[in-house]
Image (cartoon, rainbow, N blue to C red; front, side, top):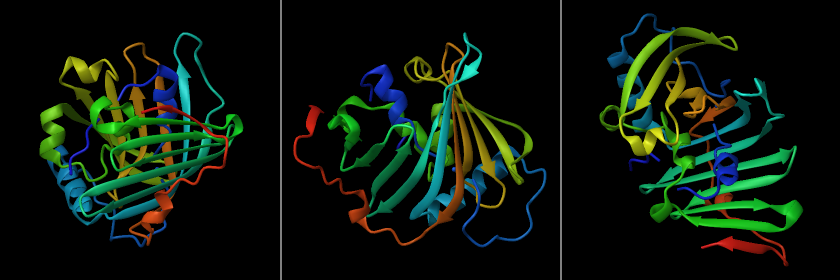
Length: 238
């Protein structure tokens, strides 16, 4: 299943984006390889994608506003990913600073804000959304990436004590570049998944997303992606 990229409101788009990873909750797979080529890094990511069934991690994100030259207060929470029978399920729970839950399943995006008793619901297949950018590097096949992006291997870099390869993805189409002019992925040189993402807008504003305490292929029931709503919740959208 190839997921490369819905466009509700601008505010909702960035709230949805709150999803992605770094530290490790899995065993290491040998010594960290050095000085790989771009093709070798993409091949390693392909190998990981073929075996990736589920993931659990902590997640944090901050938005940089270029004209103000500052980050917002950001948010942090827990992230869950499940791939089952060709379907992909995502869930992000944020307890602070404003509690919210994002779920993607069965072709729908659900964004729930309990403090205001509101659920925003959108059809993923028809509207397509920035939320799908969050899946870049997680099971995306290299040929599909190459078809959609110009990819450069920028450098090797240590991020929070972990060796990474920094990849820069530039969208080939005007449609994609209207969302982000470029995307930077820091690929962990042991796990071969992104532990950090930088999603840069044409305005030079960007979203910085990091994943910590990554646990690959844990047992996650599909019920984890159910959303039970209390009475009185207002539903907005489709």
